[in-house]
Image (cartoon, rainbow, N blue to C red; front, side, top):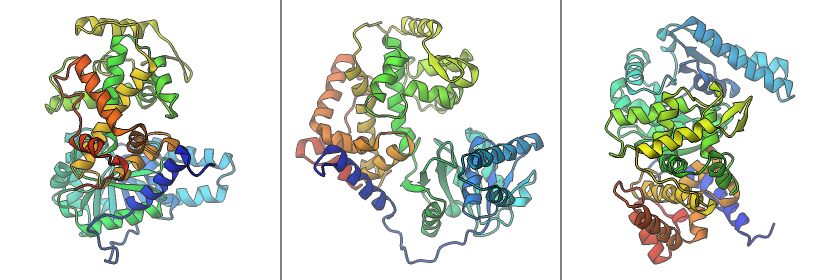
Length: 445
């Protein structure tokens, strides 16, 4: 590989960024850490089971607590099926499967968590439900135990307060499938003690994860940036683009999966419910067209691959175009006064989906939610399928030219209006564009 090539520079950047992400400002690496000899996981669903597998794989005894015997049995059976599938590929022996399963226990009683050094809740993504679980954990966990939430969007400080033990609390946001995906967002609450954070960082290495620390905000680093990406995808669909065109334009850059296929795989019902939860909390723009497509898919029972239809219709796992989806988008556009167009280009799709995402990433660094621009790139390449040969969204923006990113955002604001701030440029991005700085090398203030 030519050392001066863009791809080489991108990979070198990511290598440096991963090393930097392991160092948390203000943390004394020589200070004693908390001992993690036994782990508890609340919830035996896909996420809970996958999280538990990480610790069993690392030799750490783990108990899964569920409130329903059938759900617990299904969860443990799913874990065994995952291990058996790995063994069938020759990556584990039968003996190793049995050793790992032997490290996993199940219980219907929260008292089984009383001797755990770390307990992670992985229940349904609903603030009231998670708040109740965290309160119960605060009552049952032993003194000095670390309590964590696997929430992907919710306020860690609210959950920490619910536990009654905010100093011992933090977010551990695993990515699905949790036993495969390398990224772990570690969310530092307002009162999280330094030794709790340092222990979580060391534990991430033990279980083979790439950890990035995030501050508290909606969606943390990755999902906060994802919101603008999904917003513009839905707008493009209401304007006349097809799911295949939107996905194709972004996949041509090297993204593992475009937004429509991604949401169909994850479940549009899950995505739609998150939007509705934010609406109930008063955290959405006053725009009736905002994420209207995914909400309508939820309401109409088009929940993605698992229901046979979402943004696409499915034959098995094969996505196919669907006239019913086109009709759905046409009706939404008509009801919300959105003009139907036939001139949407791939270049427009890329700019509209990725450039607001880049600007949001700059805000995240500027606010100190991420410690550095490189952390954002690690999150997106390790957790969201952003192509490593592009170095992550911050590095890609530097390579394109920050002045070109700013110019495009301003152009779209002028063409489309900016009543809801969708095209507002991050002050940090604007400043770096004017001074010739690099976003991927920027540290938080």
